[in-house]
Length: 92
Image (cartoon, rainbow, N blue to C red):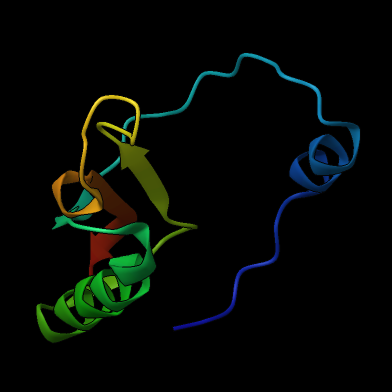
């Protein structure tokens, strides 16, 4: 797996703090749903990356985390649901 450098526009937005709208193309993603505290998300990311490699896929870009709930809507960190996604393609 290769390290990814954020695109210039992303770095600029990180500095400015601005919001915008963009269209993203359809893509295949490998995903895993993590249940529990956000402190455990890194272990789940590593598990997903291992799955990608072991199942003949390769990463095609940076990962995405979808937070399906938060501590406002659940009472316990153990009930947090985070979907992790990595764009992939099947190796030839």
